[in-house]
Length: 119
Image (cartoon, rainbow, N blue to C red; front, side, top):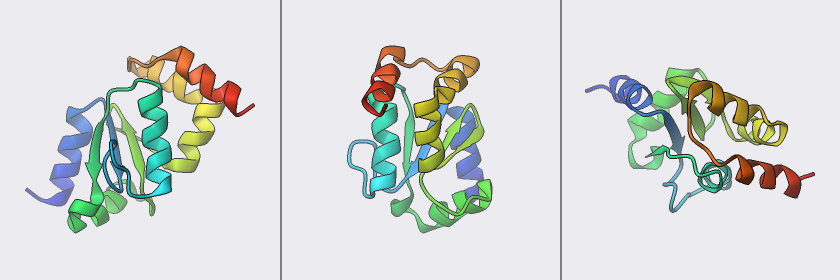
C-alpha cells in the first residue's frame, strides 16, 4: 500500500486524526505537543500518526494536504490545519463549532477553560 493510500485510509476510517512528530502520549516537538495537548485536554478521541516512524508518510502527508508543516489535523476526512490554525480555532471557539457540526464528542467545559486561561 502506498503512503498516499495509507494516509487516505487513516483520514477516512477515523473521525479525528493528528499527523504529528511523536505520539499523543509522547510528542517529539512543541507544535505537535500543543495540538495533542489541546485534543487530549478537550477529551477528543483521536488517532495519532507518528510521521517520524515513516519517512514516506512524513513527506506523503505534506503532499496529500499540500501543506508544508507538521502537525496536521484532520476531522471527518477534512484537513483542518496545523498548530497555529488549531490554536487560533481553539481560542476563538471555531474548533468547538467544527466538532459540533461534524458530530465529534469533546468536553465543552475544558474548551472554555482553555479560552479562560488564555484571555
